[in-house]
Image (tube, rainbow over all chains, first blue to last red; front, side, top):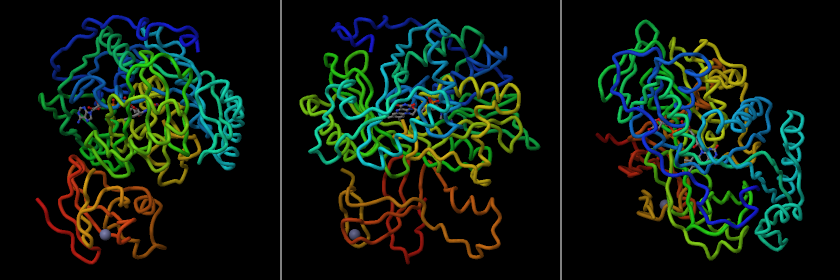
Length: 414
Length: 92
Ligand SMILES: Cc1cc2nc3c(=O)[nH]c(=O)nc-3n(C[C@H](O)[C@H](O)[C@H](O)COP(=O)(O)OP(=O)(O)OC[C@H]3O[C@@H](n4cnc5c(N)ncnc54)[C@H](O)[C@@H]3O)c2cc1C
Ligand SMILES: [Zn+2]
């Protein structure tokens, strides 16, 4: 809560807009590793390949601009209070990296550990929440069960009246969770990766993946063919399209996911509040906007926009939980494209094509994983075998049945 | 709000409908003979194209009937709707 304790001019502690932070090279004819997708995961993977494994003859190919996909569209919630051991492993690994990331990147990322409340509105919610708190504690993750009065103390603007359609019965609380400034995270990774020799190539769409005798040898792009020793896919919402190019079938459905912000307000909201049952989640950005998100649009869509009734539902939930929001105005809405798996867990690892690696399926919740998956995926690509933290997240689990079912289990999935 | 053309009721607002995912996924003809991989394919794997997609919708708060649609997932544009007993239209 540090930056919320005293009233300050909103935005006063933000750094100036940066100069150019990375080179903009033309593609070379060949690289040791090509990473497809210049979102958070692609940039973090490039950074850790260079930093942890000394692999710097690397290109990140991005069809648009860096972080123009989900990376700078998400609502920046970071937490590790997932139910299952497999998830705890990789998300807590990630949270620990977040805790040292500004120093590691030597760049401000405005990581604010203001805590996350996941509200419970029904008796079943309460039971599931307490179970998750116990599971988290067994995994060494900070988590507490808090009653409605405790929720009110942590976040005074929450309506805990019993007379609403979905009364607040309590919440799980993870004090070390929080938010960060997503575009700075991308820039921080991009700057350091570029410094270490990684080529970040924007406006470069991968249109084909070249495979010879079951081994990947390069990619076809809008800027010509590029050869590669290894190819690592980080295409988020477009992962099915990329996997199709390699003849790999992935159990993903791409959906629009919307979010919105209010106008800039004085600090009113000291923490992060998420509610699965009424489906809204809210924090207040450093600059002062209320940042809110909801659930996915039901239909498959690559259009980076969703339907307005989703926003209406989300706002009615928000106003019931936070009556003072009725006076705020929606300033801007947008959508990203999220790649959802049947068990709401990611797919990270090797594929049936040699030297082709896949990172996808993070759906509505992969921002928090950026440092964690970046480091584990870099390890996987460098060594040709999964890191222990991503080992459970194989494509094969949909055949063997070893699912990591975080749908519902991990409260709302952002 | 987007209008969806129900093949029985005509154009209605999107909130009246629910989505049913990929169309024309048949239940396995010989379930006992399926390998684990084939079961996985039936249970978990669906097409996810960027472009034309044949999918199911139900007009939940209207006629409550299911139908199929061909929709462009890139633009969200409904290109055709057809009843379950009708063949999938060919669209270029
Ligand atoms: C509205 C919204 C709210 C969210 N809220 C949260 C949250 O609060 N907490 C959380 O943890 N997660 C959240 N997420 C999810 C999170 O943003 C994603 O899981 C994560 O960003 C995905 O990894 P990425 O950053 O690499 O993706 P992206 O930034 O989408 O990167 C993928 C990149 O691949 C590029 N690409 C695709 N195809 C090609 C091609 N053929 N050639 C070249 N480049 C290509 C795209 O242009 C894109 O830049 C949210 C997502 C959205 C949309
Ligand atoms: Zn109808």
